[in-house]
Length: 241
Image (cartoon, rainbow, N blue to C red; front, side, top):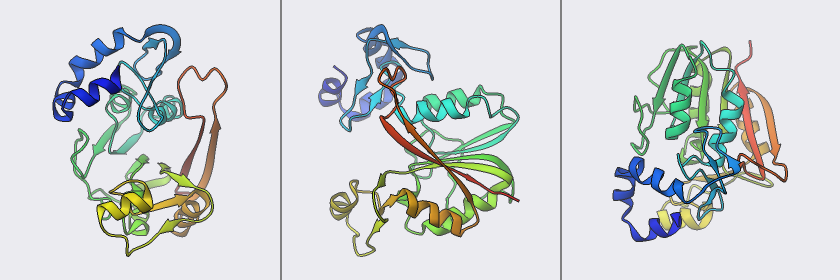
């Protein structure tokens, strides 16, 4: 039903009226088989989107946001947090997590955010944040080393940045000659991506700017009540002193 609505109703209308439409959609998925840990909704199943991900019928959260919240939920109290391109429901949950300060930012104006910070020149003080969330950002940035250096700069000593991008096996794939949207879609899988990272390749680049990396690998069990991705990797990049 959800995918049918997306095909029939203009995208701008859906986005403008999302808060009214989602509760109606959720009625058709009510049940006790799966559970969204962000909004608490219990459903008969998650909605499979066109990319194969599991969307919550009520709040629209994606699998990676629910997994990240399971990691962050108990660790944000009294922390100063910066969140790039924040998913709506995850952002709402973090705002209720008793942080000392929570700043959201989105340069592309696609997400509702407090600020419009340039990741290549972040207008925030040195050593200011305890935690930075940088999910599915770096694959859009041509000068990713500069972006990583900025993330390192704004973190407090022992602060942590949670990073995720699409990943491939082998080495990082990038080609500066690929410039048009159609070429980038063909080469990198999305028209606004400039590379595809490998896990090992991204770790090397993050280590190059000073981070210590903990690789978090997850594999969902058969029940998968929270609708996480079957396999998922998150990089926990720490500014150790």
